Image 1: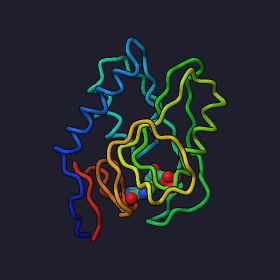
Image 2 (image 1 turned 45 degrees about the vertical axis):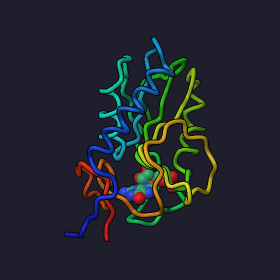
Image 3 (image 1 turned 60 degrees about the vertical axis):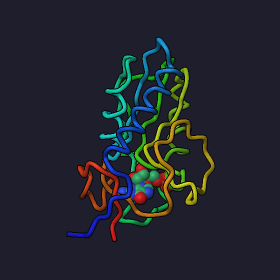
Image 4 (image 1 turned 180 degrees about the vertical axis):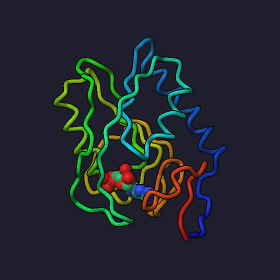
Length: 170
Ligand code: 5GP
């Protein structure tokens, strides 16, 4: 078993999620929101954020992958598209981490074609120093340095997703 160090502990994550939820409530007053989670990593973040929000939140999922092990590959593969229409809806893409920006720029273009009323992005983590494609991320939990992180949905070869904190492998 790899040695995992804690980067962001559970109580810091929870405090930040409270703040992000308030911000989203303020921006979407009186509106239903579609949370479009990117499988699988966004799941804990999506649920923990949604349960803090008073608006009605509709869950949709999309599955893409751009990673093999710890190295980013250039190709983005879509494994599962959304089933229900998002036309005219207020959509927030829910991501675990923004790294190069490739996944989200690909997905934003794909989703804009489905004509939502609005499309924003919320991510638990962002690694600004790794960005290759500039994109506007509306809600960011934590900006982190260039470390490979696991936990809170994030995996290393499918392991560690259920850790209740964000850690990095030594
Ligand atoms: P991007 O397209 O922005 O380069 O990459 C986004 C995807 O890469 C994330 O959804 C995530 O699956 C993966 N990724 C990027 N950095 C990390 C990391 O530090 N840890 C893990 N587990 N996945 C990462």
